[in-house]
Image (cartoon, rainbow, N blue to C red; front, side):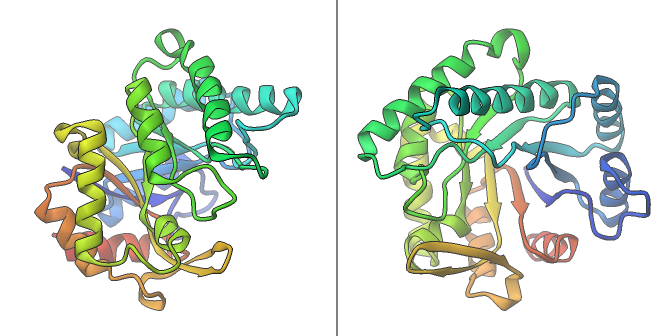
Length: 272
């Protein structure tokens, strides 16, 4: 089954807002999933996490999390590297309590280093983080995201390779890949090839539990600039949904459109 998720509490959530009220509003709108946006910081209120878990389970809402942006697993600064690992571990641990399935992470900036060196630095950091998995987040996936700029770690090859090594799965952001490829990866044939590569890397069953990001996107020579509403972009979203349905892709598709629930519902209704 493929869930369509809103990225954060819907805009229409009644005041005072918050994740719990956002979950209730999502269900009222007919949305069955949410990505909780911990992009600035990770909360540490355990009781609040338990409340989120309870409400999400009652409403049958599939949860994922977006970890803080302030992460660079390729940093040469030992303090910054340690802080990056700490933020990821906090997100994974709190996600476990909240009942989320997967935590999306922007892993690293390349900082002008050769790709092989960046990969090795990220791999060693991920290995260190996952040493805590059995104790602190046994049921949560660490999803390294495909990124929209060549200056960032996060090609499909990179995230598939590291995911296979550690038996995790990535967050495939199709908009980021489209921007990084300067307008390519926007057709049925290209998406089929990409999903073939994903399946070859992680196994046939991997398509049943994907963590996907999707939206329209503006880009320039340096890659991603900003996310766009679907109808204001070059995204061939109807074709994209047709490929997902044909391939029986499951898991969650988080729509990162600036229109929030409007575009989530557009995708869901079209898919259905």
